[in-house]
Amino acid sequence: MSSLKAYKYRLYPNKKQAEKLQWVLNRCRELYNSALQERRDAYEMMVKRHPNYYDEATRKHLTHEYALSYNQQATQLPEVKETRLEYNDIHSQVLQDVLRRMDKAFKAFFRRVKEGKAPGYPRFQGYGRYDSFTYPQSGFSLTEDNRVCLSKIGTIKVKMPTGKKANPPQGTMKTCTIKREGQHWFIVFTCEVEQDIVYHLSLEAVGIDLGLLHFATLSDGSTIENPRHVRTSEHKLKKLQEALARKKRGSKRRRKAAQRVGKAHRYIRNQRKDFHHKRARKLVTAYQVIVFEKLQPANMSRRPKPRQDEATGHYLPNGASAKAGLNKSILDAGWGQFQQICKNKAECAGSRVLFVSPKYTSQMCSGCGAIVQKELEERWHQCSCGYSLDRDHNAAINILRLGLQAREKESRARTERSEDAPLRSPAIHG
Ligand SMILES: [Zn+2]
Image (cartoon, rainbow, N blue to C red):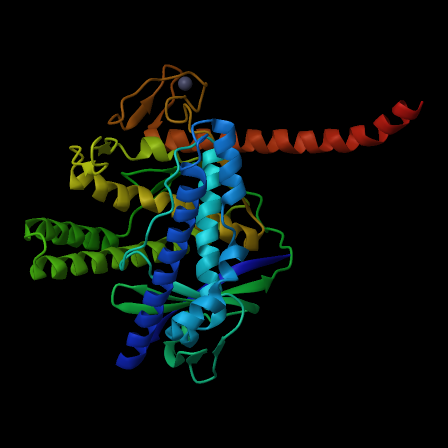
């Protein structure tokens, strides 16, 4: 069994190298945007201007027929290099990767169209949005003295944590991505790691209710709290955000304030990720089965829908305060990540993460199954059967029960299948 693992380290380019990295990033972004333009033009010329454009079948056929592929765009790269000589100074696989990203964006777009969802058309990328480039196969290496050699860029210092925090890349290096976050540069290696199948030592199972009051409530009644340092930095971020809102648009002070907000955001993100990793490790070590509720993105952020100006297509202020956005990014964003981290760690630890429907988990009594309606602010579950416990604790018990039921159903189906199989074939022949 093998899996992909990512290793991220901070890069310390000197001034000249940082300029070069930014220069490569700019060229990649330019290529991305031209590739997008080409695809748009092709659509405009061959599909939109077709006399039968409004016939759905024709339109679908034409869109398919004239959609540019990765290969069609990639074969033009030598030509690009002839007219724009500076592109010769970038590793050719890095450029191919730019076009592959473009292709991915379109494939995702078409998939969402097919699924009947409302997809966003792939967008032109501004300076702030396009922040990484990738060596998909070769052209990079890590040296003994903590430097990385990047083809056509040079040798840059990289910080490899040592001692207790040491986390050197393992397995076979597959790709290398250079990423800018604000003013800082990072390098991410994805590596293929071989793993043995592991069996978990414990048979214990736990249900987990993720919430706002406590970060998590477990079915045994214990809770996991948000760490104080994260709350402190969240408070700081809020202050910085308010300061930003007071600055005049387009001013130098505003730009500075925006940089400070971005920095605080990244800081919190890292703090939280660190916290998630630690808690997830404890959970997968202690429990063989971990049950969560499926998150529902739509209900989670109680935020008005964006309103679009019909004439210009611009988005109008919709009354959703900046607070709603802040709430969303601070509170909700963490849960999905935490579940994902638990899932990844569980794979290595031999434990399993299950997801159940969140329907009725907080309303249903974990003692007798009766539905006890309560408002969001009611923190206590009190049932006529005599059960009386914390609302989230009650939910966590329900989550655990649903998870175990689902698992049992699954294993029953599996044994039935294996029992049926040999019986069925003679019946057909007989
Ligand atoms: Zn009850």
